[in-house]
Length: 304
Image (cartoon, rainbow, N blue to C red; front, side, top):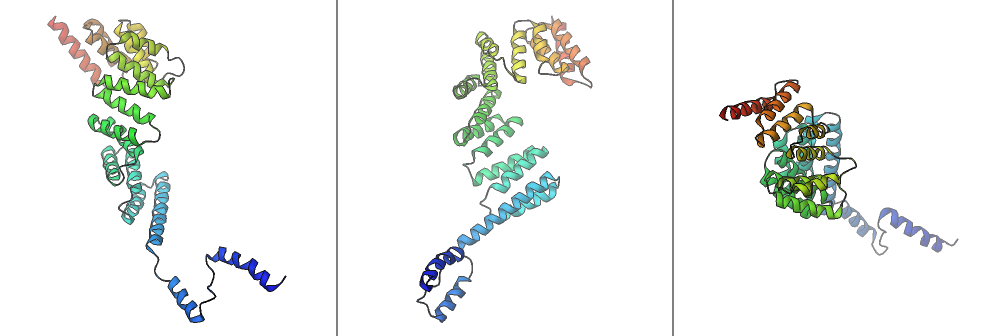
C-alpha cells in the first residue's frame, strides 16, 4: 500500500482517539503554544460536569452508607453533596427520604420543602410531601402539595388518591368523590379507588350507591374495603356482619371499638357500652379509646 493511502486510513483513526488532528499549517512554535493552551484551566462547562459527577458519587456513597446503617456518615456525605451546588435539589430530596425512613417527619418535611424551593417542577417530591403532611394532620397543606403533584407527576394516580384522601380529611367529600371518579376513568377496576369512592358516597349519605360499589369489589379487597363494608353493615344495625367484616381488616380490639363508635352515634347506648368493654378486654394493654368510650356511654345512660 502506498504511503499516502496508508496515512489517509490512519488519520481518521487518530482523530477519533485524540479528538483532534494537528494543523499542518502550524509551525513547531505554534504547535507548542497550542499544546500549552490546551492544558490551561478547565472551561466553565468542564467544571460543571466535574462537579455534577462528584455530586453523583457522593449521593451513591450516601445511599450505600444508609443501607449499611451508617446514618451519620450518610448525612455527612449528603451535606457535602449539597455544598457543592446549592442549586441542586437531589441531596435534599435524599435527606428527606432518609429522615422519613427514620421517622423524623418534621425534618423530612423541612428537607423536601427546601428541595422544592430549588426545583418546583419535581412532582414526585410534591407527592411525597403531600403524604407526609397528610400523616401529620396538616390537611390544607397536603391538598396544596397534591394539587401540584397532580399537575407535575408523570404517574398521577397516587397523587390523585392523596388529593382525595386529603379532601376527605377536610370533610370535603364532594370534591373527594369527583377526584376518585376522575381517576377511575383511567383504571375502572382499581380496588383502592373503588373503595375510596364507596366511602365518599357513604359519607355523603348515598348509602345505596356505596353498597353497590362495595359489592362490585370481589378480587383482592384491601383493608379499607373491609372497613367500609363493616361500616355499611353497622349503619343497617347488622353488628354481627359488621364485626365479621372488620375482623378481616382490623385487630379484635379495634373491630369492637369501631362497633362501639357506630352504636354510640346511633344512640344504641347499651350496645355501645358492651362493644367498648369488649374492645378494652381484647386489648393486651390499656386501651384509652375504649375506656373513654365506656365513660361516654355510661354518662349518656345516666342522663337518660
